[in-house]
Image (cartoon, rainbow, N blue to C red):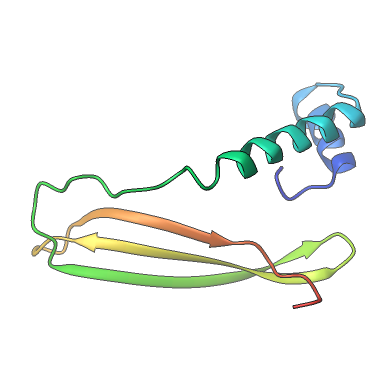
Length: 106
């Protein structure tokens, strides 16, 4: 639902979950979540867990897909991974990274 417009979220909640929610509530909730994320973003950090085995290989992946952005048409969103493997080729951990589409004025 994060990529939907407010009216689409409202319709989805009604059609798929039987929940009637006011558009103004969805908009206020979205603004509140965004404010919390912006306030805490600099303090959040991510550290990979301690590994029991020695890491022998690092795999890096990159992929993209086109997303329909309301008035901007289609834009490419990107996702990447960094995977850690032991000497037997067993994946020990993967870090997922994502980037939202850029606007027209880049």
